[in-house]
Image (cartoon, rainbow, N blue to C red; front, side, top):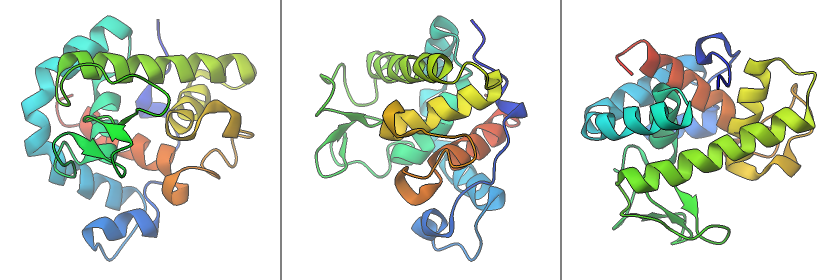
Length: 183
């Protein structure tokens, strides 16, 4: 199943707040691309697993890599696999308040679980907004992965309730960078 072409999704990239994680003097797509590139060396450690999970679930591996980059900086921001004040687990930061943790923090099992959650939210957004095109639904699903589909109300303000006010825009820009660099 195709969930849309990540290269065709509109994006404004990272907000100033997000870009300040790395003390960048700029925001937008350039900041997202810089952060993706900074994580790319560590991302190589998970490339085989990312590709297998993407193939199994019909999700572009570049998108999985982008979520890993945003959520855990390819594992660099985690402490023993945990982030978000011990509420989130693994490379893709599965929220254990809503989901059981599966697998080791950097395992294919974890990536499969988290990508399955992403697919769930994309299909929820497809049902909620049937008139959006596939790329808009994909972007809405990415935002919902961060904050739940109940918080996605319009395409124009898809990131209104996301972390940093830019989650889907930042992830899309990172995914486009990864797509252009071997994922």
